[in-house]
Amino acid sequence: MLRLSQYLSLFMTLWLWTVTGYAERPPDIAGYVTRVRGEVVIENAAGRRSLALGQPLHIDDRIVTGAKARLEARMQDGTILTLGANTEFLIRQVQGVSPKDSGSLFELFKGVFRAATTQARAEAPTREDWRVQTPVATIGIRGTELWGGFNLLDAGSDTLDVVMLKGKGVYVESAGQRVELQQAGEGTTVESAGQTPMPAKAWGEEKVQAAFQTVMW
Image (tube, rainbow, N blue to C red; front, side, top):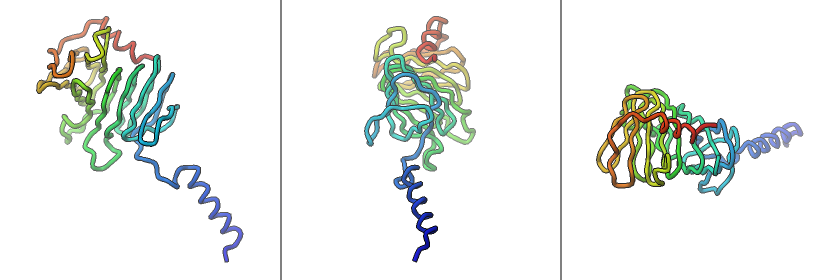
């Protein structure tokens, strides 16, 4: 028969598994919330819940921010991700979460984001390192910092703007055409789905500051 100490040990083990979540292993963790302000929720197969500082983010989480809200998260691939107000952003794939994943992939449905990625790996295809898909274009990032989003300076909810802030380079691809951003301060615009990106050009100070304001704390 089990002694009292063995019963106690078994009980404590089962209790710890329950309160720490080991009774049912959670989905793979894609990152953690490092800053949050205002109403920010995630939606996934388990339902909808509010996010708080320090909480994990998982693959297939859709992040939704409210008016005047902000979210900052550190992803498992080392990227620091900031979302502005009224944004919907989906985590599809994050480098390092699964051995089969060759890069990180996200989707931006509306709103704005800023990302500071780690340096691209020399042995990896640059196209696959870090991408954000949107309804109008795909943004590819090669170890850099950038801002991207819709309706900047009231350009329209279907108009996507992208600017490289620093780093190695960014590409924006839509309608079979690609524009490369190779200098800090260069940006491009895609006016709507099916349109090609406008030629890269240096943004004026007003437009850069307007972009910064959407993700400032």
